[in-house]
Image 1: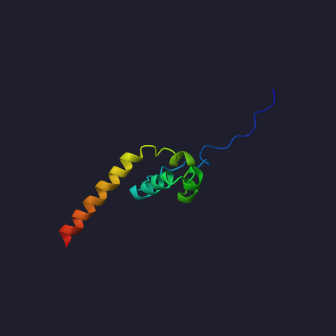
Image 2: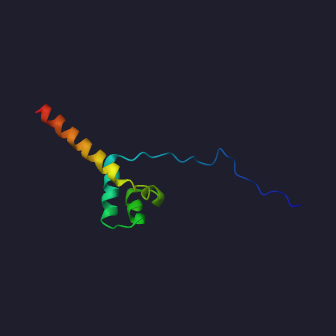
Image 3: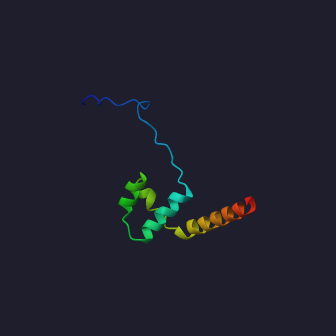
Length: 81
């Protein structure tokens, strides 16, 4: 039996970090998808993988969250004035 090839040490392999997307980025992605942009071009623009972009099939809940945030910000600005 031939000898095993050398393997890399697990310490050398870098671990990927998890990115959390802001609501603004999520809204931009859903808007781009509704306008017909391709998933790969959206992913490249935001520096994400295409699989990260394609999970935004629940765009309704993201849009609803965006409306809630903007209404809360409007109330806050009104109270500060």
